[in-house]
Image (cartoon, rainbow, N blue to C red; front, side, top):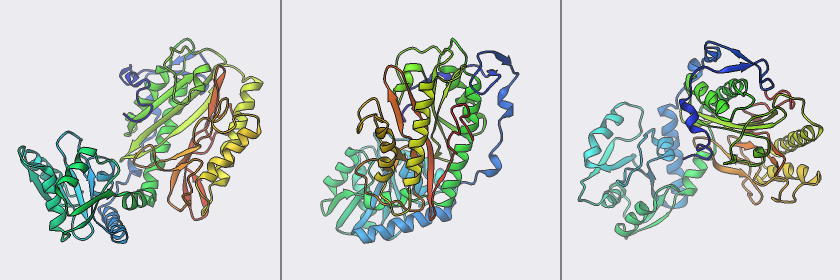
Length: 428
């Protein structure tokens, strides 16, 4: 399961009617509405799937990188990278179904023989790269077929790269039968491809972000004094689905539980004056959003709550300013963390303070390469996408996190979602 998905997923089945408060998140006095989801905007006209032309350019870039790294072919297990390069989506099982991208030639697939007709149906839809299939019967070796696909591309020895999420038994099976080849990591090929997002990818991530903002607004209106986080989670999940997104997660934590960055297992009942920390995301055409907001429910914030909220905003802004072309990703973490430690928290990852990295890469996976963390010397380039989310956790009191994602341009970072203007206004 994706991170945080285990939180409140049962709320998805809750009733479709919600109670909307008189303010976005500050009232326990409810007003009945027939169907608040009817207010949600439609994004259908804006969604443009990734084109075949773009997928072919991805294959071409991968083959160029294979040549530079002396790799004769790469193997992709069922999952995100197979989808990224080929458009093929296939569930994982104990029976290997893989894509093989050779350094020269066309993409091919290795699949169980009894699944060949289904695979051909998917290929016939016309939006998949590659149409050559190497089937294997139940009593045959799929690894011999993978080797055959590589040999048929013209390679007789050298390196076969395994994408990082290829399961061990597949990589080991290829290693045992392809004795003329060295099985290596395909990271030098796959990561440089996926870490740089195209304008089409960024556009899909922007739509996913816009959907999540709308869903979160509706979720805040569903918060009710005396009830648990499921009201928020259910509203966000239903809103995502109503707008045509694939719901990913909707976490809400109240009061002391907000100090746990990914939630607490303890029962929570909302009361006035509680800090409410929420974290939500969805997928559009396979591309993720990820947004966190922190508010105070039903009461004026205390001086302490406002002080920490404002400090977190300052830290997030410092991380954004540090995200410049040519700077290392660790500079984003260092800038945000300095604001927090200068205020007397930490140091380093110690609590109370910032217990985790300042940001993570995002794209087709909710967490990808491009982490804003100490020690990551990777240089920022146009097209990189990542979150900026310094978190201040004060165990026993509350936590505050502002999370918004950015994409890098030649002129610096651009927010997918604008940061919260104030503790009383979670959305710009």
